[in-house]
Image 1 (cartoon, rainbow, N blue to C red):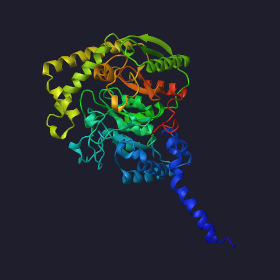
Image 2: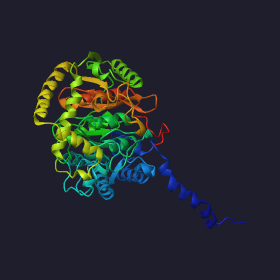
Image 3: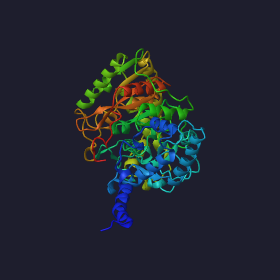
Image 4: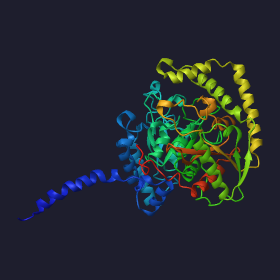
Length: 488
């Protein structure tokens, strides 16, 4: 029997088709989407991959399970996709690399929290009330990211207007490490997209922990900058005296790269492998009094690493740290009620309306007193941490709780917002000081644990540098839900 060319084609063509259909989807962190931004840029420079190829892979991933809603078997992280804009921007970036005219973030994919305006692309703030809202201009931080060459590929789900809950009007966002658990908020979609390797960079916002909580729960990195370092123009804000945008990434070095682009600062170097000469304040008291045992152990281990890297460790107890959460709470509720005084409450979620109703009850005298106490607290905290280059504390007091038990107690303490959710977070918001969340390990349930690195006003770059040095000595940020076989 003669084996003809047609016979050979008949045998091999189905195999080729199968390879074309399944090959890229089977690759996980060994493909370009497993690279961080620094790795992508190095590959662009060497010509091993192009922005067009990377953006194509991102869009393919968004078309797959990771881009779907939770009800459809996905993560629920994505609000909308700018396919046309992303492909066009990728073509420009590819041409600029060929021409030797690359900008700092040239061709790097970025996802943007849906509280930040994107020209021509729906920006809902996570609210059905604004479901058809299409801005005509970018938010200032989006403009800066694009100017640095970043490619905006998608908008990410947020808690409603930055202050709803995990049951957002557009669906839940599942934690990539375990889809039965929350991501935290309100920058839920951005953190989940990073952990799921949908993009290496993201833009988030933080009013009371909204960048750092989901970063800690998802094993990613997020910076709440010094208040005022970044413009809030084009941000659907909640509390104007607390709101800030900020960079999110999988590594501190990537976050530093994005932050430099947003501030028009110098490109950060690769960092060091030593913390000699660096004074690190180790916060105790309020920050460690209520911790799950696995979080306490991971934090102690992280502090040990900092000491082994040469840091001088200085125990610090900020005596008024407990005032941060209640002041942040009152100011947020009062300002939210003013910001959305004219919003149609029948078109808002019950969770968000309840917060507005709380704010309605705050009288002007109490609000003014809180602002005065805030100023005094800021002075106190700055004085307490003076002499340290940075200070460290646990990020969240536990790993991400399951959707079915969000209000579980931690170390016997009920899960009220001031006592648990904002316990370690709110002080840095109300004082306006920079705070970075970095992953430091995994809990008994296999979910990520984070640490905060905070500092004096405008010490953002120092926080990022210490984070990068810590990550050069550890591998928590390298692990991914795909490698761990999680039900992502």
